[in-house]
Length: 244
Image (cartoon, rainbow, N blue to C red; front, side):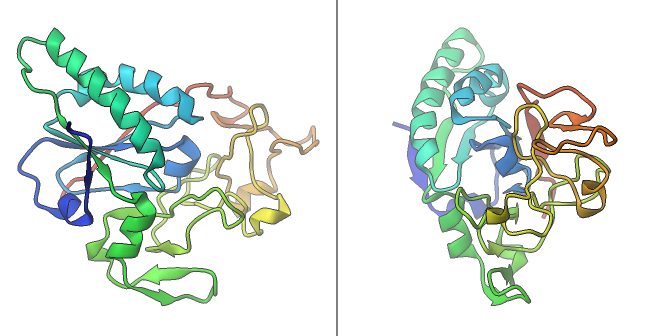
């Protein structure tokens, strides 16, 4: 059984193999934070909901089967427990179809997910915001940006201060769905059609209309862009780790 929980040290070892990181979260989660590991690609599956993940894995099977090792991760590890079983079966079948690939990749899960990883690899000091803490030891943490959480905080207070998200309108760095407001105030930016969270910076927010805002003088924001179509299946994104 290759369904192994790996500790934080494993992901930090120098890679001599073809390694792929697989983000099993939804697009609005990975938009504001994801892993970037030297000499490894990170596949952002960019699902809208977890039930779409098997379909994406099937589409990416030819790419994934070429890896020697696959490291799956999600917020706390729960989603990877289910997805890893499906992925291992999929890769085994794919190897049987390919004469030049005798052994499927080994599949690992990040034990405890991103949350446990951040707790184990970061040394934090308070920022001006009492609810957030910045990372003092950025070289030891491969997770870039913020860890999205499904509670009133919107994201985990543990983060390295780097902004990996971009505004859907002006494409400048931005990672705050709520544009400075508290999530409980319900000022978040959402697609006009499907209501999924989208990133719109503070400068652009007053120039466009998001879901539940009636203003015919302003262009509507969809998850595909301003006055564009709604993305019912966001494209998979490959993040190259490059060199540390």
